[in-house]
Image 1 (cartoon, one colour):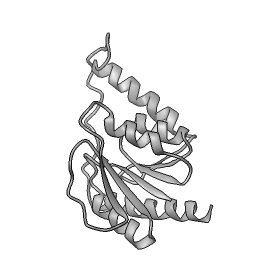
Image 2 (cartoon, one colour; image 1 turned 30 degrees about the horizontal axis):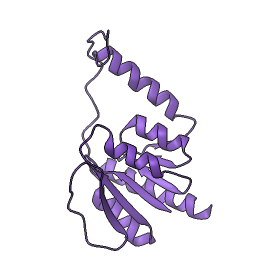
Image 3 (cartoon, helix red, strand yellow; image 1 turned 120 degrees about the horizontal axis):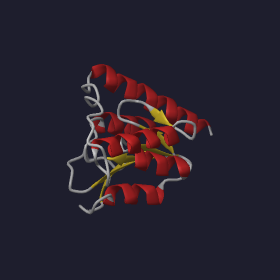
Image 4 (tube, helix red, strand yellow; image 1 turned 90 degrees about the vertical axis):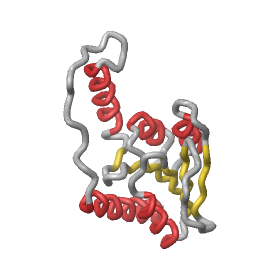
Length: 154
């Protein structure tokens, strides 16, 4: 079992590290640049480089059943689910085969409405996510524990 972390903007690095150490599970933080992480044999940093989607591509290349990917990036979540891995957002939402396709379609629609693709309408589609607070952090910790327990049971 391995935890793969899309680490550049991840607000729950400490919680992931604590869970990995507590459970004896490897946590690999994948980033476009160097990040300071706690020194522990189970915690590793992989610097994928600054290329567009370099970290996402590095994570997607190693996802398989038994991995848990932590990301807010819906296209990466889709790739990880298709490869058989479990996926959690830093807010504790789990993506799986039943919901990741819809999330990807919604993301693509919003991007098109904002004008992020050729011919987009330039429409304001919302205020963005709620602030990341202690409740979101607790939801993540609980969700990570549930997913790791489920994977360990096989």
